[in-house]
Length: 258
Image 1 (cartoon, rainbow, N blue to C red):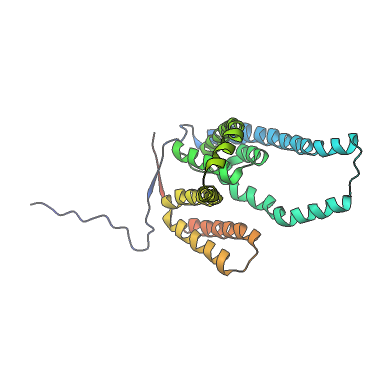
Image 2 (tube, rainbow, N blue to C red):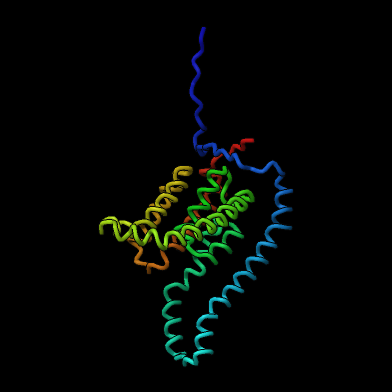
């Protein structure tokens, strides 16, 4: 007599778990990966990245210093201070917000390169996120760090070449396009962020829904200044994620594929 098999049902109160396939995981043990990354890779990345960024920070000031010294142009330091204060009032908070927000995706070396080269939100973040997804690695893992670094370096080479060509070609193309199409480029960055959001929300839809609700509450109803929206949402979701993780709620089951 045939028996009827009942569908598998999780016990009441036990969180539903999904399998997340990670196809790009290294065959090395976690201890070996920690030894390589902590003992060799990360110290060199910090040393090279720190000195490279400091040297470039000095280089950035050479053109105005050259003009001041060789052309003997006087400088109104009061005006410079006012301009600096005005700029800091707007962009200063992002010096703290962006490294914290982007670090998990970019990694150590990728963070140094990205903040030196620029185009972080509209180029480096999408490149890094997509590369890690295609490679089948988890963001923030040792494998993710390496994949992100390779992708960001490759993106800089591509961007340099495309910028040289685009300076001529894009200018000619934009002149030939109708105004409504040119105006649509203003929505390019929101579209990129929307695509990145969906990329992660599809994998963990509950976090995606909660993140969207928190963002709407902060941006629309909180009355907080615009510069604070990103850090507030980031820290609220980070705290919530830690609390849920510690309680074993909404945890995906990870399946490593050789």
